[in-house]
Length: 170
Image (cartoon, one colour):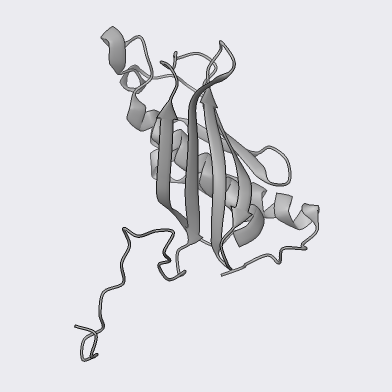
């Protein structure tokens, strides 16, 4: 795992985001859903839909974007932004708290995530928004991204470690 130190130059952080954004944009789920991820400064990333498909639409007689697609956008933006701290190490979103402020129209949809802080080495706290062509946030979220090889923390209580075979922790 490549963890960038807290005092790493902004160019290293931006390079980590750019590498992660390219990797996240090339994964099968991003290709299928036409999701592009890119850096948006030294501690932020954005994710957009480049080609709107009929399956992207879901609610209100299919005039709105499907919530699952919106979560995929947010997850990709958060993982890319976290690369400012984690480098291009594989990561996972382990916690997501969302506040839906209104429906999201299928025009100009952008998820933007930025780093809010760290909880030890390899755990990044993020804030994110989703907006559409009307501007202003339609969704606000807070999330926790960890490096894949980071052990579970109290910040991600759903990922409890399992006792090792032969250990006394059964």
